[in-house]
Length: 163
Image: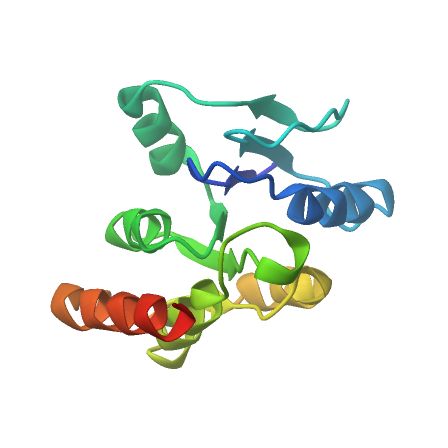
C-alpha cells in the first residue's frame, strides 16, 4: 500500500525549489515510491511524479494533512505545529538565506528546537532528506505540547539579531 507524503512549502513569497529538487531526485532513484502531494505556494516546479498545487482552501489542505502518513515541511512554525497537532510524523527542512529562500536563517533555530524536544525529525539541509526518510519509518514523536510564548520569543530574538 502506498503511503501519502504531503510536502508543504507554506505561503512564503520566496521559492523553495531546492527541497523539491531533492524529493524528485529521490523519486527518480526509487528511494521514494509513495504518492507525493505538494503544496508549493509560489515555488514553480514541474513533475510527472508529484501532484503539485499552489494554494487550496484551508478545508482541503486540512483534509490532506489528515490523510497524510508523513509531512515534509519548511521550517515555519505554523506548518510544523499543524502536523504535530494532528499526530503526524514531521520532517522539517529549513529555508536558508544563502539560497534566497528567506531573509535570514531563523528556520534553523525553529527546527532545532522542535527536533531537540523530540517532536520532529529536523534537518539542517535538504541533503539529509534520504536519511530522514529512513528514520521516519520508526520515529515516534513526543506528544506535542504547545510552547507558543517561548516560540514567539525565539522568533523575535532571531529577527532582532538579524537586523
